[in-house]
Length: 295
Image 1 (cartoon, rainbow, N blue to C red):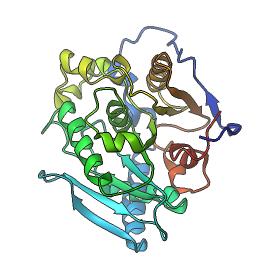
Image 2 (image 1 turned 90 degrees about the horizontal axis):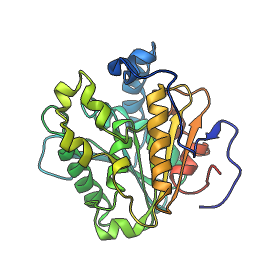
Image 3 (image 1 turned 180 degrees about the vertical axis):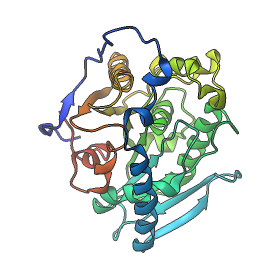
Image 4 (image 1 turned 135 degrees about the vertical axis):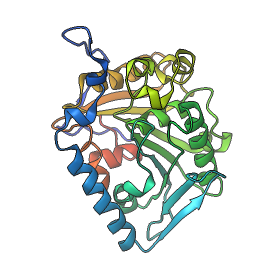
């Protein structure tokens, strides 16, 4: 990636050290993004309006394509007006329990403006499956989406999607050799990278995480792919645990000699951190595509 000065709103957090003032006594509150952002419902309502409107306006789209046999093993592909320069796969969040591809179509706009094609897959949700199963579905989706294409591949995910792209960037990944060879950049946006705190949350009744799976599916406890370009982006106004989770992974993975870093974005919280993906000239869009760096 070309070296440029980072935008003023992006604060390097490469040390990875972010300590709470006091020990966590209420883990549910520490990880409850909806509680932390009083206007959460308005953001979800906006997604429900913007995403279908974007699909209706964008003529070059292929909707509800299958990558597997499951009911939710579907993806939408949005094509630019030219031969695609590369492929971005964006994986949505929702604590592995909510949402699908239909909420996030509008986030394809920025990469499309840069001439990239954008795929947004859905996956089976907890409690119907476990996190291990979702990771496997996303590997299958990416392998399917990218098998016939050419050019670089960028992966980005938000929240639970941030965890999923990070997990797929680990050395034991199920991504095909062909995908790995074309992988130019992986970006976790507000991701959870050490799953062990999830064991303490009430929502784990749905997620059904156990200690063994938490260890096996935590990117921060695993090795990254060699020669990986990987970034963690988080809103500076997010919950302290999400800021910590972002910094910790970049800090640990830097010890493996890969191209990695962590940045906090001033004035952004868990739900508006992804808004800039709608803009082709936004620092976030350019960074996840590997066009420009933040440092």
